[in-house]
Length: 239
Image (cartoon, rainbow, N blue to C red; front, side):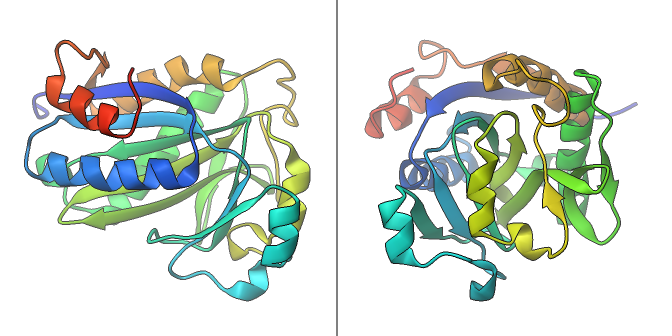
């Protein structure tokens, strides 16, 4: 028999600036460690943002900060693993705040599970996706459709995955995505799903989090989750 299903709350924060999301994750992670709140998955989109992970290299950034400001792009050096990546409207980001000590204390396993969530989600839209040896993330053929970069501290997870649904792909011209040269990026729209939106993908992904992690996924309710409601309100996120 497998373990008892763990309750995991999910909510969609919509378009949220990166710094707000990052600060919120840190706050939620500390409260998850103290067991004040349950496991969570935050869904959102970001305004145009380029992030550089701990192992990132500046030569993978093809635009200087002054140019980014002129184009309305925010640049953030962050504490996740991985190299440089882009976030923007039309890209669905999922940030799981999970206590792996109650699931499985294995970071590589966790990365593979996130990939599996994405692969199964895309399959629901008849997009055949797969892993690629030596790379983290999910690919459609030779093009990357989803990036993954996580941080695990005291077995609490932050950061997560980014799935390209219908973003403006021209912003990828400013970076070498994930530091992988000679490989292109793609999206669900480029893969033939012209009318799909993040709002349509979220319910499918929620179901795959449930199946892959053996979670009991529950939509956020401010009445039944008063501590979480207070934390969200502290960031002016009254959902």
